[in-house]
Figure 1: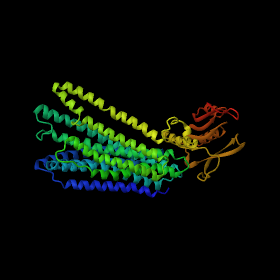
Figure 2: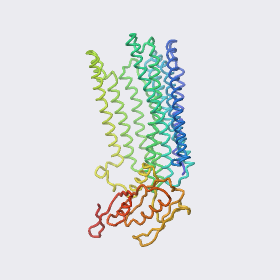
Figure 3: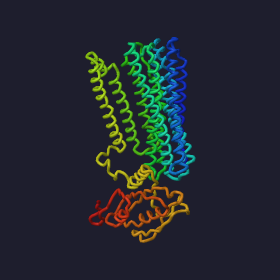
Length: 562
């Protein structure tokens, strides 16, 4: 399968992102770290963070080695999964950890420099802080798209599956490095989070409670540990977590697109469905970089004005990405590209709404936080009550926003055909039946066998065969399945178009079982329930599911469905 030339925008965008991340990092390192005392504290925090990260990666490395060996046994010993899975798993974990490491390394160097820059100018401090933080974001998306494009090229070259199923195999294998990233993120996020909270509580108990020293006072011996915890939990852990989420969303969309169009008869549609999320992510990187340079503020700005300055960059990038989405999907010629573009916009709007809601409930510039602070005048109990109440209320907006966004995105994709949004007739029988069957096969973890009564070019002479009688056409047909695609280890889901007398399905089941494989069930597009085939197959103990069951067919009364 030839890789379309437009695909190379994806690795190019990842290289651009990593280049800007390196440039922002170098610019940050040129900033003055401040007074000798600031340098000393920053060095202690940096040393502690790196010590924690080294210990964590030692433990995670052992876990990954064990899991990789297990996956290798499944692939090469048991033969139940793709041979590329262990390698994809390892690279996913490696790049996830790398994203966290680079982000934390930047943060530990940027903290003192940001504080020192803020002593000179508020705008200067904001630029150092934001662009240093952008290093994390750019590293995450850069490494993510680089890993995705790398595996797509490798698997496209080495996977020897013919036809539309090739993209299904490629995208589902690529999902494995998302699993590796998730495993790494689990250790980084949870382990770092535990350290953060333990150090924070320690700083409070040792300093404020026992010695009466403020939490962030350099004289507090727990301050270093507290700041180390913030870096390993909220920076390194967050970086690994974001990497997993970013890659997972792209790969899941690509895999669903490959499965949905695998039986549509057009590999071009399938490639477009796989390319679309990658290209949107790639163009999003380029437009986000433009937004970074728009973040600036005036001297003496309030917290609300600082947050508004950040919003300018975010909102500008979002508008550009929304406009670019229309162009990308139109250029690809994706079916219903207008509706899908609005689905993307729905996601962008939802993200902005959730971000603004978070700002409203957590910033001291707004009433919720001010109300909690005011409740401290009457004692700690009222602070706890006010904080819990505000926290519970704050969850309503994100939950409702996500729910509404899901519904709107779905409706946009189907052209707001609410009346028939669940009706099979909105799609052709072939696309709906075979496409859904392919997805079901992936979900159940079993191959999908298509019943064919004619010898196609991709079926070799080395095949299992059986002869079945067609009552419809009054002739005998030979059904073939290549031996290379069917083994005794397989669990097989059978797909056929029509089920009447059941001779073809019965013969195919017998053929599969003669090879030693297990039949898990059958999916039928249209079943003639007034003929004995369905009842006979079910009586043998096999599960049969049909998209449509016809009760009767009469020239006068028409077709009556069950």
